[in-house]
Image 1 (cartoon, helix red, strand yellow):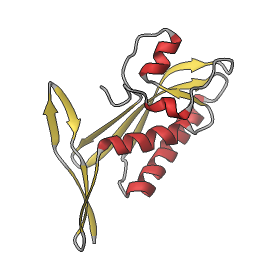
Image 2 (cartoon, one colour):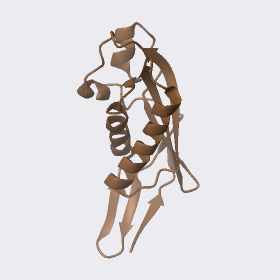
Image 3 (cartoon, helix red, strand yellow):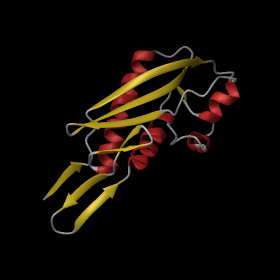
Length: 150
């Protein structure tokens, strides 16, 4: 029998961060999944979707000459509910609602398949539109030095 337990938030330096996710199997012991693991799964899944140009991150913002406004994936957990906020740049000409809905569905499926954690809501924030002439960042650039910084 497996069940999931969301750990309480840990407050550090004025920031609230989700503690690790514990997946418990009575027969074998605990499996602890750090929030950063979920962020990577969500980031890769999102970046691979047609119509997504990039996730918000420091390296991409610097290349555009914009102020870095934070990372592209945030996870929040309250009352045993898991919510994800994803900040994306989409490609000009795509249907924003169609791409956003596809991100929502694929992120929920990918997280459930990889971790057996159910994501209750996936909120998509379109922070910009990019033309196809602007080079799409490489997947390895998604996880730059500032990806996990708030």
